Every structure is written in structure tokens, then in C-alpha cells.
Length: 323
Ligand code: C5P
Image (cartoon, rainbow, N blue to C red; front, side, top):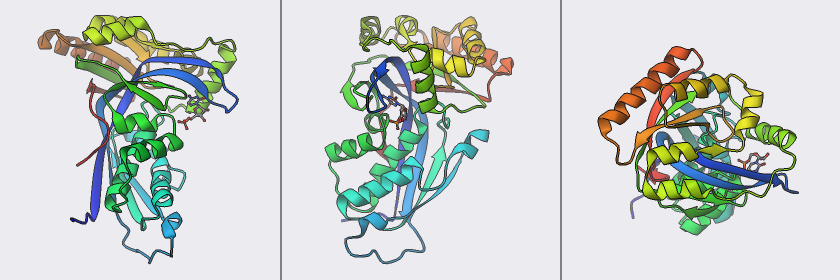
């Protein structure tokens, strides 16, 4: 058997095509109907044996130490990545060690392209990648089900980063059912210079919508996805957290309006924000038409002075893969 000394896992960002949020639960979470769609903005997480490897104490997984570093092309976003034990990727390494009794000290490098605290599940993606990478590096042999179970323990969005493609998340978002989405869609993302805390946006949601109804899947979105019809998908994009995100960062309304005005087929705040997502085409549409629309949306957003960075991507794409 080959022993890997370094493992790199590539993992995608997500955008929510629908995020329906029910009333607050007793455990502090909210029941969701969350249509996740994985897009081609990738983080790469590399784990290696730490140089200062100490012998593992007997039974030792719980002692695993993960030293974190981060890099990538995100400008000011990188400064928001915590590089201590609170980082979800470090917690993922510890969890694999605890569950399997295997593991030795590792360095974990996060090569980031997914916005940080941006509503695109970048921290969750890194955690999913770290689960897969540590499992492989340590030969821990966790099953797919066990990895998904660890993922759900780490956070509501972590299981989807393992699975990728397009899926509906229910419960607090961690119970996944795959969803057929035959079309390939092109997206533009406007990154904000600010971050938003997910918990804070949910609190704002509770303040604005104390009487939220139970969440349900929008049949118009499901139908549009099944047909791979970009105009219908664009028209059906909804996010119950958008109003709360706009209440905390009102300038996002102008960002959304700028992309819409430049021809986007649909626009919404991604997850808890503040990244704004613009669907610019796909499916059976002529590639030149899509490229023109995309260029127009990118130019308008870049010229608006509202965004820190504007990036393009396509979806859907698979979940975490070992490179
Ligand atoms: O699951 P995760 O750790 O990513 O959630 C972060 C925070 O977002 C939670 O502490 C909670 O405040 C809020 N949340 C929620 N309902 C969900 C998912 C997250 O209220 N379904």
C-alpha cells in the first residue's frame, strides 16, 4: 500500500438557489430547505506530517495538533481566516483522530479562493477537505457515511461540500437529497470588502421575521432546474436571509441592482452573504450570448466601486476530491 506523506484535496464553494428558513428551533438552529449548488471556485487544502512530529501517546488521536497556514488570491479576505484551533479545518482533523484513534500532528495549508465569511461556505468547504485529507493521510479508513456524519457534526453546510453538484438540504441543512440539474450555468460573484457572521444574519432574520412559516421547496425552481432553463432558474432564485443581510449591509441592494441592470438573469445574496451571486446564463443558450452577458455584468460590477473583487464560475461541479 502506498503511504502518502502529503495529501491535497480540492473543494468547491456553494451558492444557494433557494434558501427557505423556518422559525427558530429550541437548539438555536432553524429548519431549512436549502438548495445547494456547487460552483467552480475552489479551495485546496493540503495536509502533511508536521516536521516537529512527536510520538503519539497511546490511544492518542485526541492529541492531534494541526498547525494552519493560509494563502491564495483573495486580498483582504485572507486576514479573516482564523489560524488557530477554532478553524473548522483544524477541528475536522481533531475529529477524525478522535473518531478513529489514528493520526499524528499535521500542518494544514489552506489555499483559498472561496470568499471568507462570504456566504459561500468557504470555512465549511475547508473542513470537508480536511476530513477527506486527514482520513487519507492517516489511512484512517472512514466510510463515506462516517465522513458525512463527521461533516454534519462540524457544521450545517459541511456535508454538502463533500457531496457537491446540486442537492436539497433539509433539517438544519445537513440532510441531503441529490437534485437533478442537467444544465451547466455561468455565474458572476461580487465579493464584498466586508464579512458577515452567519449567526448574526440568522439573529437579524428572527428579528425581522418572528413568524416565519415552515420552509418548503419551490416547485418553480425544481421545474426550472429539471429543464436546465437558465432564465427560469434566474427568475426562481430566492433567499429568505437576503432581507436580513440587506438590513445589516444596505449597500448590497445597489450591488444586486447593478448586476440586474447589466442583464443578469437572476441575482441574490449568497447564503448569509455578503457575496452577491448573478446567474448570467447556461443550459442550451448560445455560448457567445452568455459570454457577452457575463462580460456586461462583470464590467458593471467592477465599475460600480461597490465590490472588492468580481469573479466568474460555473456550476454545478463535484464535491471534495483528492488531487
Ligand atoms: O451550522 P453552522 O455552524 O454553520 O451554523 C452557524 C450558525 O448559523 C449557527 O450557530 C446558527 O446561529 C446559525 N444557523 C441556524 N440555522 C441553521 C444553520 C445555521 O440558525 N440551519
